Amino acid sequence: MSVRTVGSIVALAAAVVLIASCGVAPQQWQPIDAATASSTSSGATSAAVQETSPADARAGDLSSGSDAGTSSYSVSPSTPDSASGSPNMTLFSSLAPTATDTPRANPPAASSVVPATEIARVLGTLAVKGRAPKTGYTRAQFGPAWSDDVTVDGGHNGCDTRNDILRRDLTGLAIKADTGGCTVLTGTLHDAYTGKTIAFTRGQATSGAVQIDHVVALLDAWQKGAQQLSAAQRQNMANDPLNLQAVDGPTNEQKGAGDAATWLPPNKAYRCTYVSRQIEVKAKYHLWVTQAEKDAILRVLATCGAGVPSTAAVSSVSSKPPMTTFAAKPPTGTLNPPASTAKPPVSTVKPPMTTSAAKPPSTTAAPKPVGCHPLSSAGNCYKPGQLCAKRDHGVTGVAGSGKAIKCVDGNGTWRWVAA
Image (cartoon, rainbow, N blue to C red; front, side):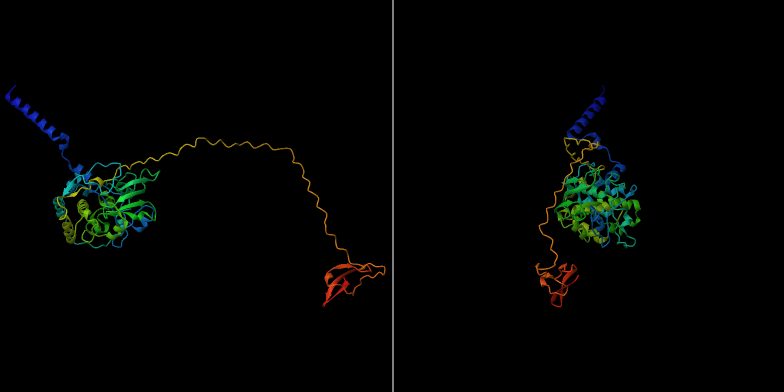
């Protein structure tokens, strides 16, 4: 064996020892190609939705919000987004986790941080321009609200986007039966914008307590470059989990369509994460910022210290919703016997005839006709024209002659007259 061969073996052995001591598997050194970075970046950070119309909130489970007085919501069908492969997103994409079927709380515990200097660098790549007019803006420019027909993370998983975000951001979920694990009935939100804990209950009068915010408001996007995007790209943006966040309803309405220069979350501890996500969304969809907006973001980043907590743990939604198993109804134990179709036999025996009791004889004797009264041997009988008693008014009788007579009032004097 030559000296050169021995030297090669020693070098190879040293390399193996070095790899083992570092605890790093060789396959982890494989570079991430552009396609991998692009597909991962769709869900690289936490998400949020705003601009949902009050009508959506009343639909039973949709959030409400405002966009500078314009109704707003979320999106629908899309085609691949050319912006998803933006080189500015490489840093954030590398932190994105694999999607899981288990809903996660919001905000998550930070597993890593993004240096504030790197976030500022990405901000520096965004164009700085004035705000374009609102001309032509309608919610319909971003497609149907909460459409599943998109190519961003969570698209085509069989659930609407709103429920995707609720399942991702809420804890203690109760899922409605027979909805394929999609529809959230109840849950608890640990709101990143306010720091409050909010109970969510699905319903027209209650769903508005938890709304879905667009981190970059749709009207703000429209005025800063979204007009130049394709309809499919705008639909993707409105349903992209990167840009959606379940939040306190009233706080979402206060935000409206504001950018970082006009609105920041009341919870100051979340502002670094919030502005970094706005930068990610604007870089991904090639939107610009105003000078006032850029200055406001830089002021926030100056307070972030060494880095901003990564929100990668909530940056995506499961491609397949968690299937909730509902307990089957316990067996009743005894099956109901089949209904008998046989008719009962008809009895041919006639019931005994019941004989009604004879009516008792009347105890009241029929009034005797008035005739010769009083009966006397003198034959003193009443005759027409004779006086009769007032108590006999209306009484009929027979006169001595055998003719019918009646006692009537004759102007205060009662007399017998021919009946």
